[in-house]
Amino acid sequence: MNEYDISKAFEEIEKELIDSMMRNFSRHRAEELKEGYNWSQWQAEQLKSLEQYRKNNSKKFNKQFSELNGKVEEMLKTARANGNAEQEAKILQAIKDGFKLPDKPSETSTAEFFKVNDRKLNALIKSTTDDLKSAETAVLRMSNDKYRSAIFNAQVYANSGAGTYEKAVDMACRDMLRAGLNCVEYKNGARHTLSDYAEMAIRTANKRAYLRGEGEKRQEFGITTVVVNSRQGGCPDCAQYIGRVFIDDVYSGGSAKDGDYPLLSEAISGGLFHPRCKDSTSTYYEGITTLKPATEDEIDDMKRQEALEQQKSYYENQAKKCGRISEYSLDSDNKRAYAKRAEVWQDKADKTAVKLDENVAKSTESGTISKTRQTLESAGVEYRQIETHKTALSESEIIDRLGGGDLTKGSCSSLAFAYAGNTGGFDVLDFRDGFSRSTFAHKGTIDEIANLPGVNGIVIKYYNDFAAVNKLLGMVEESKEYYLGTGKHSAIIRKIENNFEYLELQSPTDNGFKPLTKEVLKKRFGCKKSHIILGSKTQMSNQLIECKSLSESSEFQKLLGYINTSIRNQKKGANGCVK
Image (cartoon, rainbow, N blue to C red; front, side, top):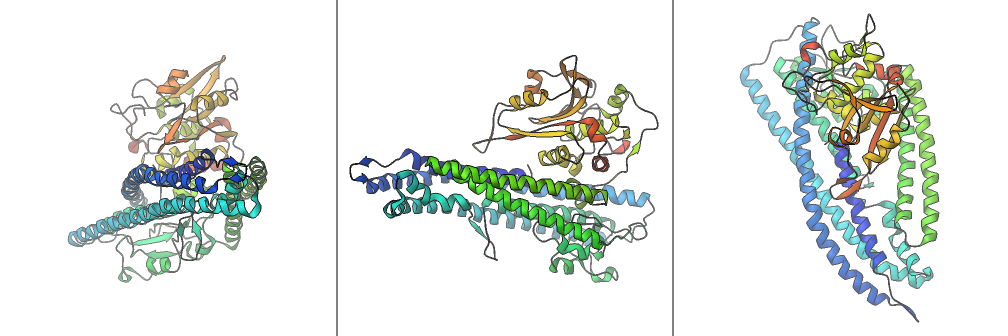
């Protein structure tokens, strides 16, 4: 589970809180008497429902909150471990490239440093979960308050001439539906929902945990210098730091005595690594690392992209607000009116998304990179340049060199992408594991790859995986190969003489194309008729991507460098298994 999954879980909880409230309003309609609605009686019934609503929510969601908070602790510890492992691989590669290690610190100082880092990580975990607990309490309190307020405001609107019961309730609930349960207030006065706050807070904490893991490994090798990644697509506000070297006194135990460079803490005080910051650091190797400060053109690209992202986010939020009001309105006229408004806002969001894709595509040609590549580079994931095969490989040769018993947590997605690269003529191996594996397994990453410029891909969201697959298989052309992501698995598929096949690459002994049946979808792909996340039915992404278009995409070719693994580092073998 990552920050997106946790944010989605909180969003489902918020939806259930509102859904339950509006069901009560719909169910407990006022009695229509000759003289009108008996609002006093209605209010008494609603207040009884409110008390039951409060008790049910406290019992149900406090347990779910506890489970999510436990996932946060697990995630931060994993991020630290991944940062540690990824950094070690990069340092060892730099040593091979000629980097000479400085004198290591004494064992005593190193041991003390790790103890301090343990305490700092535990403090980060506690701070993050404590903040989440406060926000979780706030969302339950706000839902109760909004419910109570709507009960009494409904009569006020009715008395002011709202007309029908439905219109009066709609008016009483409109502000709440428009804003959502925005229970978190920032210092600048802006209010945010629990899910939005959780995504920001967890992403920030996750990044800090990862940087701490990297810093521990640098300390172990006696390295304290870092460089803010020289790349495009970052934050324009932090562009002044790109390509500059710092002594990492925050995560790697450095100090001003380690050289003539400024301290990383000074840059952080100046705004680097602000919430939702896209920038990060990597190890600076004297004599090896090339420093590339951001150019004016690159900074302009960052500003344009940020402006489009903000505009798209605004339109999407407006569409969500109108969609909420339409979904929960009791009055049919209100439902229709706000549904149309939601469509207008969503259309604006879609058009802005096209502009954003076009801007990214143009920037990609001039060096700006996809969000996935930004994430991988920011996390310091090793990049291994891909080469073309000197001679074309047969299907069986590609399967033999790629496949094997999986010793990772599950490399199905990255293996499928590696296969697409090999069929396009590129020499790519996988079974890398770590942050690389988890990134390419993430549905958000797969969705983005499916929508890269020039890639022939489609993403659909369904409650029922089997229904989604049936729709996607209807788009498959004879003899063409595709990446299919559905349920809990991803694999290459194809249609031969109207029969569908999927490619197994994770078995220690039996890899190759096999019949794709409903039973295989159920058992191998983990497809379900519905997905319940924390008690709520949830739509899931399903992807179909044509392999040939993938291998022809220049951005996908660059992404393959973050999958590509040396033979000696592949985590596969006889003890592995399909996952």
